Length: 363
Image (tube, rainbow, N blue to C red; front, side):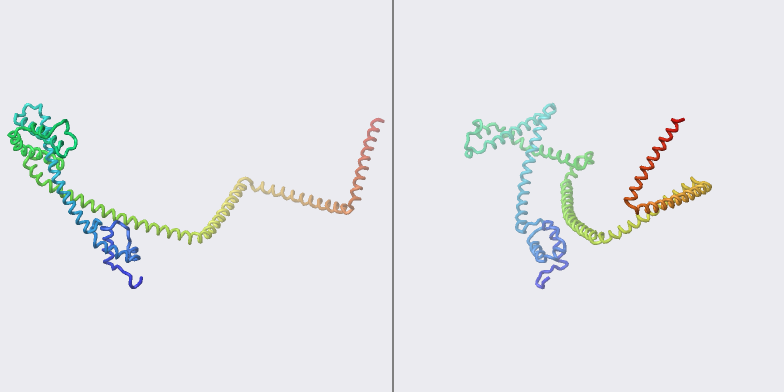
């Protein structure tokens, strides 16, 4: 490394590794990689000064936080109106379910009918919208003034509006108790006062459980990052191990193969000799069990006589071979004499046969 190169100290290396694991995407940078590219490490440290843990710049992170704050505010307002709308609709649904109940009072019927009439007229008025903004004729030729005529009487509306918060509060209390029993089934047998106390703390409990879930997700994310880094490290270690094994096979196995072959050949040769000796021993054992001493002596005498006769025959054969070699010296003259002798012998035999036949005839 040149004298002008940037070098990360041990503490800077640790900070950079924390930055790589939290702020920057997992890039599986090892200490060796950072030491080999010091300026790249300096660049990462510089970037970390302008980034938050999510990887955004500080300016964008601030704008994003403000945007999320506004979103949460609008979401809260919308949820309030939506919850109120649904609770009122559930009140009307429960009323129609209970229409068969004869215990309903006239005030209950008047309250629900006034509430339903007010909601329907308000919804239809909203659908029609301002007359000056419509380019097409109104639906069914209705105007906003026509719908306002269907509004309930003002004194009924005032009376209904005064009772509505109590009904909504009662409906919300039922829902809270239902949520409490779902979250903690043991609370189903508690009294209403105890349930109300538990519902008061339920929000804090749910917030705590939500925070625990978020912390668990954060820990899981960190563990996943560590797992990816360890997996990459293990893969590199395995590749190095495979390279070392390949090198050992190439450098040492070929050298020892000839020695192993020689040892195997010696082993097979010794084993073959042992098998031959074992076969010879079995053969001798069979012979010793088959022939007695008397039979062996008789066979020896017979073998001596046969060998003597063979030697005599060989001597006679040698003499005949010498006589033949003597006659072979004569060449073609010897062959002619043999043929002439054969003819004379055959003529003599014929004459002898004729003489024997003549003698038989004379008798």
